Image (cartoon, rainbow, N blue to C red; front, side):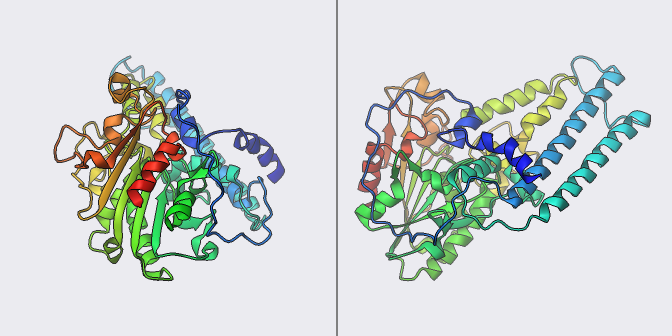
Length: 443
């Protein structure tokens, strides 16, 4: 059974992809960057090599259990969708307007309940069989890590809520391993890097360059990488991240001279949320600088477009059930509509119902230097293309923290801002001019 499931799933995992966010956004590749990609020599690593790892691209038993659960959940959801359409057609509802309330009754309702019940029983049986496979202690691979990270980005809140083993537990890692086991020759300059939506900590390496390792070589930082479920609410991840940082600083093997956080994309929002939640906690006294690369401080156009699609599908009861498919996207994705940071930005309402930017203002932490790196696919940082498309995912103004409401605008001096032209969202991870700015800012 395990081989059969792997035969179905592994080909999709092994397809070449630059990052999971590209697949989710479905954006055509942006114009090739003008500057040459980074090809830096390998820095002296602070990460110890794992003992004789058995590299494998095979799925683990827990992964197969998680995928089987997710598949059963999807089948039950499709059954609900078909039932809703059947109910609408049978009730002869109007083309436009609300659909009938409730579910079908009588024989029709019994059939749908039986189908759902049967699928759940089968799912429980499959889960029991897969549980007998035991644990696979083989080392993970970048392909598996990317696959699981993409699932978490799209459905991570559902995975966490249902106890699915595919849900990524938050941790601090080095080289894909717990930092406690991998750390060698630590320094007092602590650098924490936070990845973006549907990505993982290993994907800080792009085109043979990793900002963290380069800063370790050039400036003596010790880089530690956050690995987390990006499908959860930003504020939930921010709260857990703040607790991890407090423990990290308190238990670092030497006094922490300075703590710097670098966040790419959603990672910057998680870092800001952690700072807001962690105000007054001991670790904040060590934080000296925050760097945001392509962070949607005021949201992303694609998610706002997704809300409009949901609204259009809801106009007619005959297509309204299909809106459920779009609304299955994670809480992390819907937080990107306006850049939600606090619990108050989404609690006490349906997260899909946020039509306007009514966030609670969350200023940058006082006494901490903040730096903003943004990109645009255009040749100039002006014009409609930069304003709407930006780096392909994040509009330029959002990445630069600009907002018409002074309470929401981020007050960052121009000397602490940088715009990369003719570049996309992921070029911020590897371009030489971006690293040059990082090095200058953090020196």
